[in-house]
Amino acid sequence: MRIFEQKLRLEYFHELIKREATGDCDTFAKKLNLKKTQLYKLINEVKDYGADIKYDRLRETYYYANDFVIKIDFSFEIKK
Image 1 (cartoon, rainbow, N blue to C red):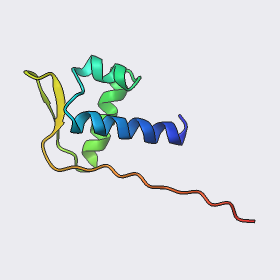
Image 2 (image 1 turned 90 degrees about the vertical axis):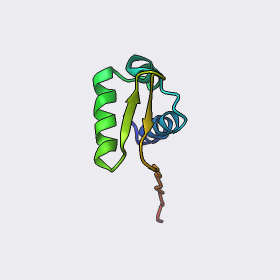
Image 3 (image 1 turned 135 degrees about the vertical axis):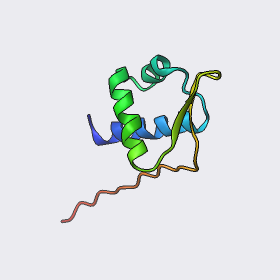
């Protein structure tokens, strides 16, 4: 996958969790155009960076149980 696509997907992943608008696992995976196993890997990877991601069965959404921010910055420079 291309780097910009990964960045956009991760930002969307973060926004959906932050807004508590993910839906269940199947819905969340579809929103991100991922397979469920890929979604679980992404969740675990973000957890490795300190995110406390939980799932609320009543509301059917993932949410952050801590204050967690994803900020992705990068730049490119062409030298002549």
